[in-house]
Every structure is written in C-alpha cells, then in structure tokens.
Image (cartoon, rainbow, N blue to C red; front, side, top):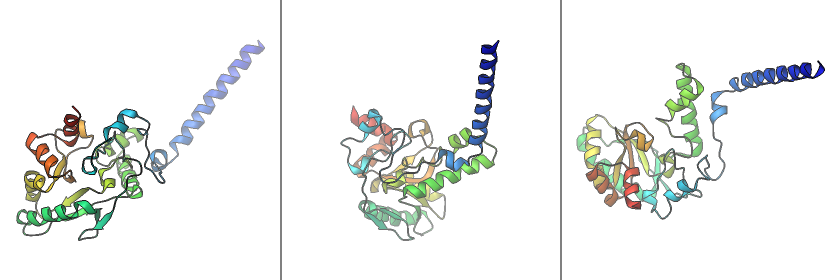
Length: 238
C-alpha cells in the first residue's frame, strides 16, 4: 500500500508543478518571452546551420541575402551616410538612390519621394518587432498567432534587410510613384523586393514601398525575368 500512495503523491506534485509553471509563463509579457537581445554579432537559431551559412559565401556586398531563414552575416560592417530627412543608408548606395528619387519626381507630383526607413539598428528592429506582436495580441490573437502574423510584416531582429543599410522604405505623394518604381528602379540598381505572389519564397508579404539595392546588372536580370532575389541567387548557384 505504501508504494502506490507514494507514487500517487509524486504524480500529484508533478501535475501541480506543471500548472504553476504554465501560469508563470503566461504571466510574462510577450516582449520578454520572444525578444532577442543581442550584443555584438547578430545571432539567431539559424547561425549554426551550415546550409544557411553557405548561402552568402562568396557573394558581393550588394547581393548578400538576409531574410527569415538567413540572418545578417557576423561581423557585418557598414559605413553610413545621412539622407535628406535624416534616415541613413550604406554610403555605397547613396548616389544611385538619390538619382532614382530625383528621376521619380515626375511620377510624384514633382516632389522628391521620402525615405521613411533606411538603416536600422538591432535595437530599433527589436522595438518594431515587439510593437507589431503586441498589436496582434491586442486584437485577440494568441502568442503564437501574433508572432506568425507579425513576422509577415516585420522581420525578426537580425533578419531584416534594413540592418544591411542597402534597403529603404519609400513614401510618395501619390500611389503612382510605386508603379513608376516597379517599372524603373532596376535602372538604378534597385529591386521591388517583396512582390505579391512571392511571399512563400521571400517570407514577407507584399510591400510596395520596400526597395533593395543589388546593382544595375542583377536588378536588370531580376526585373526582366520576373523573379525575386531568392530565385535569382538560386539560379546563380546552379
């Protein structure tokens, strides 16, 4: 009789402990449960994956791939320059970017399009990510659902192209600007990074405002063949 009673008590203790643990976990704010705090090199769960690490081996700076499966390369260095309006970008894309914005004025009521987001620090990306997750939580989504929804619009810190300094979000006075950009950005080395119909490949929902520098040669090939950056790089490997 003694042994069954002991086993029953142990089972009851484990059951109560699990319930208490679950309650404690659920009481932790979403930002603290899922935030990635990084000091120095950008790290995430893919960093030890050889397949991921090999993607950017040998690629020039303008073709480095950063998405939800491929984090910012370790020890990535960047020299920033300030744009009109205060945002910053990699110095190497400043001239072609400004040339493109000047040319786009004709499609934007003769106004220079605004860069509303350029280079982002790890901290800034973290804040944007946490804010988006919280928004979906307030709408009634569960923790997991909120994260899934948020990551369609805001990259996980360490996996955002904005941290490369060669991607920008552009605002215009009229929507016609985005039609112009889709048809002309390649001439200046930029690509419409997240087109509709490519979300399963890019990992990001369509963003008509987001443009990324890859160089004129690559941008022209991507534009003419109607592929996204991931597909283009996949062809280069073959």
